Image (tube, rainbow, N blue to C red; front, side, top):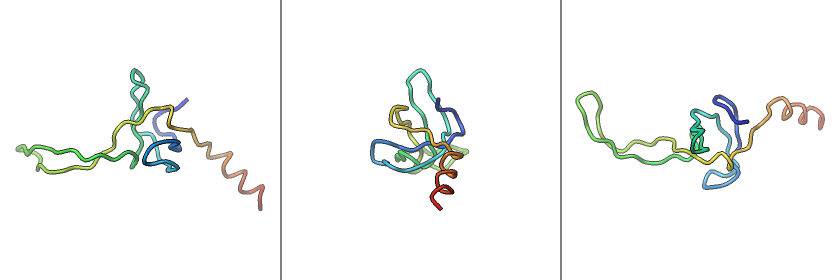
Length: 82
């Protein structure tokens, strides 16, 4: 089960074979945000507090396109090969 803070591998899409950490999950839509994956440009209007412009931010990706990475198993496989 994919949870916030876990490392995942992207299986499909423009960021295929990239790894990242889950930032946010939307259970009702079966989607997750992964750090530095599926970046999109958003046009932000200027306000009194913030300057406007074009901002890059993460967008949601479907959970079926993510694979959980087990850090312990990954390191043990490398040690076994040596």
